[in-house]
Amino acid sequence: MRKIQIHYPDPLKKKIHCPVSEPANTDLMKQQLKAGDSAHGYNRIRLQQLIDGVVGNSLPAAMQHGSMVCNEVGKGVCLHRVSETFTSLVEEILDAVIDNSKKGDIHIRASRQHQRLILQITEKNNYNGFALAWRIGVLAQAVSSLGGSLDIRNPRQLETTISLSIPPKLAA
Image (cartoon, rainbow, N blue to C red; front, side):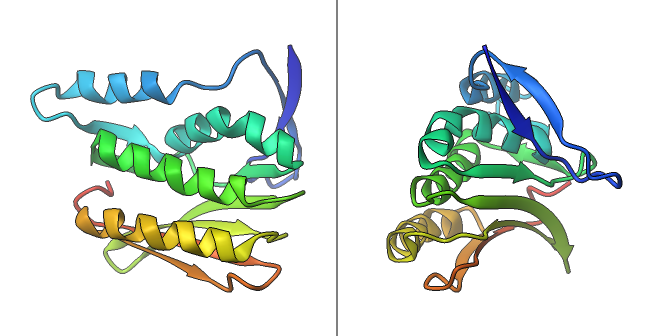
């Protein structure tokens, strides 16, 4: 068993140490989503839980790249009518960021702008911005088919931000 650092926003800026024996299972989360409304294949989930599961699956890659991932999404941010397709897209976006990092400092947060929920992934030590921008461009079409948008700011800079605009029909 190994220990990892999971960072949550905390007024005291404490680091929480968690023993991890195996990565979180997003397949299990997908099954739980389906169980809530099996006729339609979607349900309600906390965004923080979804991100934790995806990051858990990506831990081996993050460790290999020497990158730290900080989930700053609050517990009160929920999604509803979440499909397996959406969950897979979030996983692919985070994988793209982690795969193109080297000693990365990745921060994930959520905010509301107008009627949309925005998931922002900021890489504060961007290593391979061209490859990251290409992968985000490929994923943007799939996100758009769900009614959202995906863009990348400053792909050639040290600090790069990917923004996933989640449509109102998914944001609780």
